[in-house]
Image: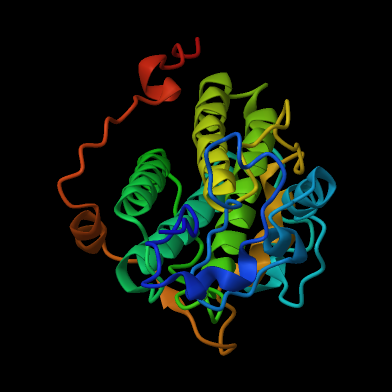
Length: 288
């Protein structure tokens, strides 16, 4: 039986993968019968994934070139942040933007685990439930610190639930945005609120783990950059990258943030060890 990728169950016959089984260099010694594809049926894939030889240049371009993408929707106008975005150093704005990004991630993974028409291996589904559990915990933590999502409805890609490639691309983009966003938030809060800044760094580390997992599952291999990309100097700089996924009144289909009970249903009985936030472990000393 031919192996057809990390994300999916093997097809019923080998012809389902016949178009994409050109042997990539080095796969034999790793014990793979073919390149690390994520697709099983008629996927839309890049030339790199078709050949099984994703080169580092295109991978880095994909993972790093997200923040500067031009977007039609205006994040600032849609959410009343003004032309300059959230004020620098304002804790409530940082937490609100972070909570918005986490709510988007929760919605993405919940939708795929609940409604995707492509098949996930049991192992991959369990991995994605772990990611969903982490994103849900991040959102809960940020809300406990005073953050509130700026919207509870999101504009997810049209083929997210039917095209595995669209899901993989979207998840990689959002994890890269999140990792960089929390680095920017840590920098923004470091001087005035170091404990909260350290908490932002904690969440950035978790998002980087998700990025590595998604990179592996998507056929790019483990994330090999020595440092994650520092795309944003402060949290408000994430606006152009997040804007395409956020609801703008009257424009297109939107997907609501799932209720907590629905998230718990998807997670099932999977044990999820929860870490304690830096700001809760090391509370700031009272000001004199």
